[in-house]
Image 1: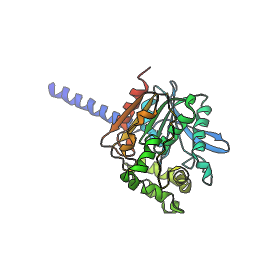
Image 2: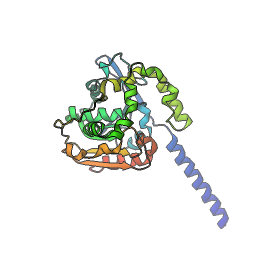
Image 3: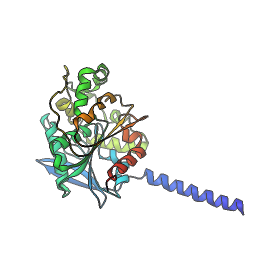
Image 4: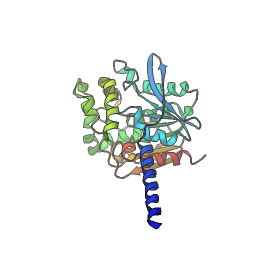
Length: 303
């Protein structure tokens, strides 16, 4: 009898584990939407029925699906929107540098928020999406309920490190290469998806990169990334009053963690700083469960 019970228990546990793995591996159920921002069509996905709005902004080379695990984690407590930045995947890809100036990228986020019928949102960004998130919060504090940034230090911290840290200068060579004329011609969808783990996930990324415009993607660097000779920005900071969560994978080689120092001196609201050992630049891909738990805990702390 004991052995029969153990066998049945083992089967139940095994089925439970299989179900858990299946749930974890599933894609988030989202609806697809478009908003026109002064003639540029921006694609975004939505999930969740109740709770505050969270707008997720991806970086390079990525698209809305970057946030798949976080969408699943938050959709029971929040309404979640994940954008395709202009130039990427299903969003429009205007020609030239000026359409990729930071004010234009910030205005895309505002257009998405308004299209959902809301006047403010939690803003969450990674990499270039992180820079857009910082700048959005500075330009539109009334529309920013809270700010979350993954692996993109405060702009002042990045400015300081580029001006004074030889390691950061050396590790930013990739950005200087992206700023060269014709740099987009050296890119391929296959090359841009080598970092993605898992065949099924990489296939989705390959399809998205083939729909994207490589020249537009590099225009983010050409229009917005600092160029040498680097100079530290010593201007008075735009002080943010909303709560800020800053997450950084410590193995990031593109954006070194020294840029995190003194972030608290540039904010008037509270700052939660989470450093993640064993994770690199794509921290939410490297440690998806940890990042999802951290986001949910932080977002629910005052509710």
